[in-house]
Image 1: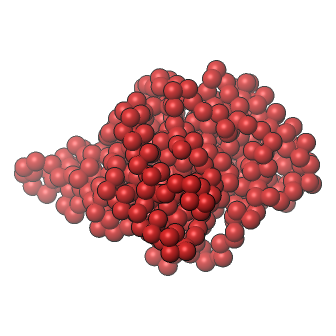
Image 2: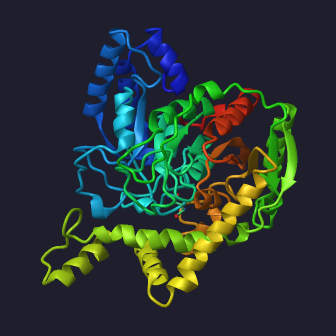
Image 3: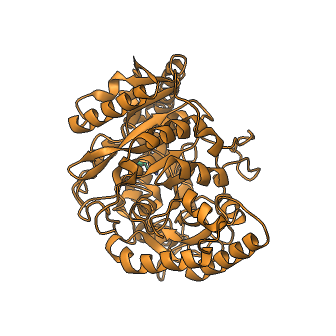
Length: 483
Ligand code: GLN
């Protein structure tokens, strides 16, 4: 039963082959048995899951239907869940029980989804390896000595290991697409403003966006359908109708114009990944797509710009964790300054502290113009590059990551080496565009992802291309040994 996709689960529940309660019990037992190897969960919510599963079964018995009614999922542990620990992977929030549900959590619960637990993540979503969590590193089910990617690494590892069919993630600079690539999943970062950020603990507010991680594009369509939509509680939520994503899957790719940026194939890319990307292009050409070389001339400036803007916003967002209102408070402070200093010094891990310091520096008087303002100008140039490219093509295709999953600890002493792994993903966040990563093959037994980018609100086009590709390839069906 654990091999079923969301789409298959929906059919099985509709045909009364099994109940949501039965399925939930099977998956909870599987998590108890296998997750100790992976560390993909921070909290399990067994009681909530069984209550929700029984309620979903009752709703079905009353004639209700729906693709998510009774479907087991998990939430990255930065989505607030009422009365349940919402840690953000940090000691700072280890004792924090959210007083309300994030919009995404509430919407999925209303659609009948069953929450099995909260997944492990890089502390405050800062990272590309899921090694900065206060709760310990997550392991990649394809090779337990390797990282699963980050920061939604717990969601990715759990879904890849078939502990559950799908999970939520968030993507500030690649944290849905990059772990999807490194664990052989399909993951989608929606257009900025498509999915509500209300109740999602903020890292960099102008870049953060929630989205689905699943094994197939078909399942991403189902989960995104439950997550997307206007939310008056989020001032950057966009009031656009949500299309029927599942209905968009079967469009023909005849004449689809795919742009492949020449800058993507520079020295930093593993040549074996380059070859797999070219193979995926050939596969799409067979389905009728037309391929064209394009240029994104400002891409080289994306990492420096992102690693100014994201820490700048983080330094502001994380100032609320001061030991006074919620979260960790140090023992016996001698005065208010001591309380602030020690609560933050003891509650935040080293990567979070590094980013707060870089961000506060970039925003300080005298440096603001030189760093923050400059980075914002580069951000606009990057967006303009994409706008020009989308005048010529319908979709942009390239690698999701320059390398496959690296060994645990391999980049710990050199944070910049880890930042460079984000080179292909962060431009979509800087421009606010939707992006998807899907499985495209293996290198040394480790999965490789191909990334697709589309114009604003064209999530349906991304899912369409990915679904058609998945109908003609079987990379996404491969299962890691031992799971
Ligand atoms: N690796 C990037 C960072 O550390 C992106 C993380 C994310 O998308 N949350 O900032």
